[in-house]
Length: 240
Image 1 (tube, rainbow, N blue to C red):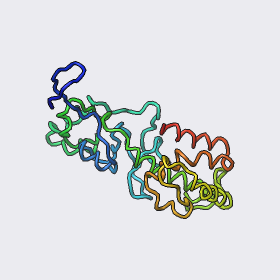
Image 2: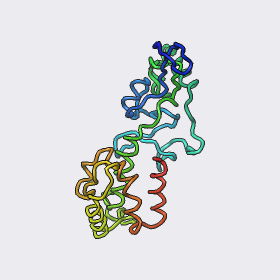
Image 3: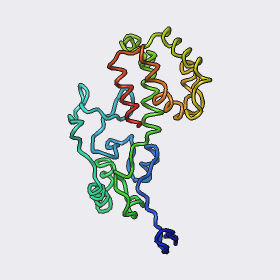
Image 4: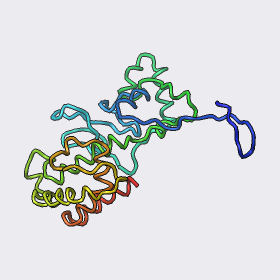
């Protein structure tokens, strides 16, 4: 610790800091947690859901119900087989004492070794490794939602023809509203928004954050059905 002085009690005390959580994208956290990673059959750091290899997409994904023609488990999203600190320790012990079968443990449990972070008693696996909001929401869900709203999410145009698709004319009106109000947007909001239709591919996490929290809800008010406005509002409340 560090020696500090408490001006209230007029006493010297030792100030100690403890690491409570770690943040990062999935590949980074997989390395520091000694996990097999999101491309493994047990790729989730929070639960033991078993992935399925897609012959079409050529990668492993994690459906709650196996697709037609595949063997697998039906999972209840409200009752998933969760991982806990104790289960991590059990999986690590299995890797370390597995003998001839130790190479099967990462495939069967998703853990391939002992993380050095387990030396810290303040760290709890997996609670100390929360979802990275920047990658999960701002650079993932937000742009995917936007592609749904502009009708560009699917390659199949019939699938894009939904009741939440906003027409090109309406998007022109939305971008005009943004442009007309750029000079009156408070400085505290950050940099003024740019034309999202033309420049959404260049949006960074900060741009998507501002779009969700500050602009999307009022701008969509006259263009989206009520139930989809509620979804947009849910994202806003989640970030609050």
